[in-house]
Length: 155
Image (cartoon, rainbow, N blue to C red; front, side, top):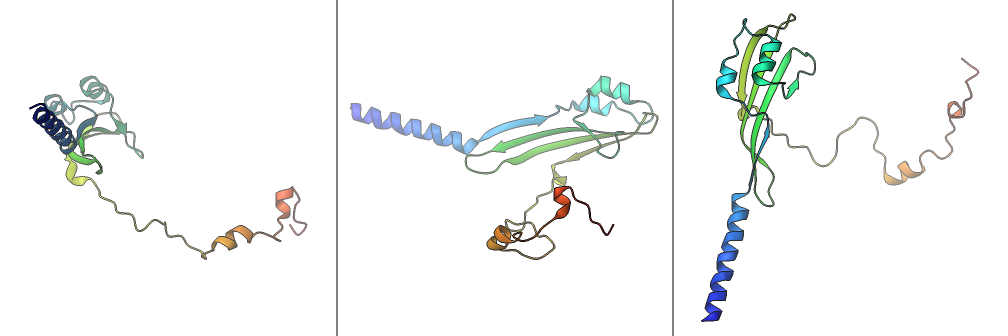
């Protein structure tokens, strides 16, 4: 009878552990976008100050234009021994003109996420291909006078 209880307890424990692996870990990253507050931002009415008061500081600003503010929210799931998968993503892009007034409010979702598959393990480069020994012994006998602080008398 005790052996049956031990087998049952082991089976229940194994099922619990297996279900934990199957469910994975859910994670939220970035900004928590309140849909009602985000819909309240109006083109031509709001400015940087009012947007900052309503939504807070952005997740990041545009790299080439500081008048582009981005609020990024992402929900992910990671299952044991597999790579992370994005389940939901929302990006709120608020664009301002030079005087700081809102000119556009755009929303995007996870459909714009780019999936990049690198080619092999190497980055293709221009130039000749050098082997191990070429790299190791290639500079023997090459003398660079500029490295010693000497100048070229022809200049």
